[in-house]
Amino acid sequence: MPQQAQVLIKIIACGVCRTDLHIVDQELNAPKLPLILGHEIVGMVVKLGESVSDLKVGDLVGVPWLGYTCGKCKYCLRHQENLCENAKFTGYTLDGGYAEYTVAYARYCFPISAEYANASGAPLLCAGLIGYRSYSMLPSHAEHIGFYGFGAAAHILVQLANYQNKKVYAFTRAGDKAAQSFALQMGAVWAGSSEEQAPVKLDAAILFAAVGSLVPKALRDVDKGGTVICGGIHMSDIPSFPYSILWEERSIQSVANLTREDGQHFLALAAEAHIHTHTIPYNLEEANEALGALRKGKFEGAAVLVM
Ligand SMILES: [Zn+2]
Ligand SMILES: [Zn+2]
Image (tube, rainbow, N blue to C red):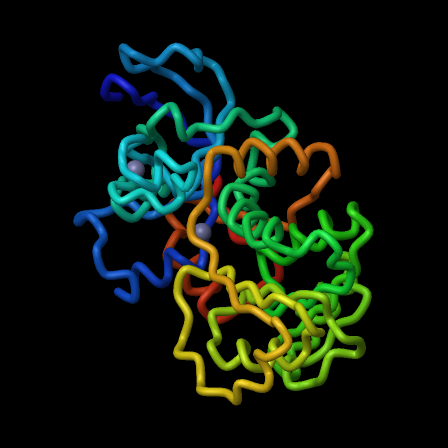
């Protein structure tokens, strides 16, 4: 049953994300237990908590990773609710969407269009949204952008980049021809191995892969003044590197969570740019198979549980 500020949601679909693997593998080590995973929830509101006034029964909503903020801590008060000291996270410190129903705080339920009220909308809620927060940290002049790791997030953001006349260079694991051709098919202008040098000096890079050794690699690929944005919640250690590759005002930036404003901006932009997601559907009972396939990198795009 929903508490005062929550709604009860009948789940339509829920994405399967790499962060779910980090939680299962205890690389993120403060989950609520027992826990229902899943933080890319698409569903329909079926019951309102007493104090909810801005949603109604029948509304189609998406529920993202950031599921609650306090509104009172210094971060919340300075518009950095993504860094809230008392934040709660869907499918990590709150029960998530690998289920038929869930409750969620109404403030963190984003209205979604009917077009996305199915499996195709699920990857927008994390891969898309956290990817968008990384993307929104690109310098405004950035035209040539490197994407390191080409999975669920990159395949969404490359479409937005193209819509905004930016060129994407996709770097994948050496020999991963499937991911490279997927990247080209989704709109990258170049795709190759992350061991190769970028074909042009990049204005910025976004690291979607959780591989620390890509940080110095990307620094070597970006031009003076360029930014290397780390989009993941977890990453293997970054090897030491010479100061010379950071020199000339290159910078490294990490990205944490999202704000409600990011959610509203991105979901509107996704509809405007007609972003399509490439999803692989699984039944709820097949959640473990979906996680296993993601771990092995068996598919291009995003796995989604469909209820
Ligand atoms: Zn996620
Ligand atoms: Zn707060």
